[in-house]
Image (cartoon, rainbow, N blue to C red; front, side, top):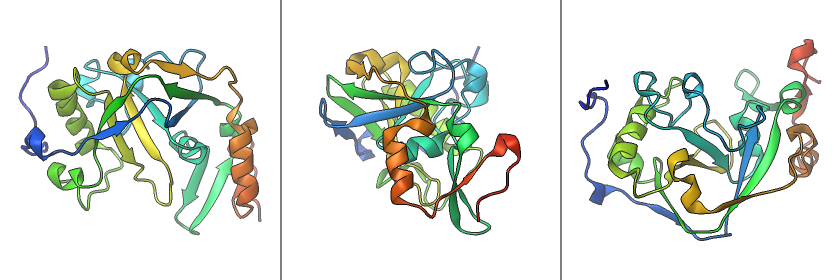
Length: 220
């Protein structure tokens, strides 16, 4: 049985201090890249709830998150099919990874309410200046937000913390997704074959291809 005591790393805050983000029906296309047959809609197993606003490991069964993004490049970076290499300050895309994931697009039929963990709320959560590869702080904050507001709002939103990554992430709580009346696209192309992703790569020819599974070197 989990303790209700909050860890010291979650700062005290009042709901009145937070800013909310509202989206109107049909105004935002939410893109999701997924690998397993039912991962477009079903919650992930507890052992795979390890991302930015998933619950802390000792509370993994508290809730599940469906990560979506506002554009294809953000979605590709979420699954590491597109990445930035700090050693040479360049972008690359991994074709083998992009061939493992499918893409689905959602449109909401009802208004959505999200709690940003960026913008002015970063100061409330004392996240300013923090970059944690383990996401420890944001995962504990996500647990606190879910416990307090999970019955009222639909999830958490943020600009990705990856360097140079454009696009906004809407992390929808699975327990609240039905209340958004989401409509899913019939087309489920592989990420590598997705028209929007191909157009993005064509518009940015400096993004070189790498085939990680075959050990091919990055293009010159």
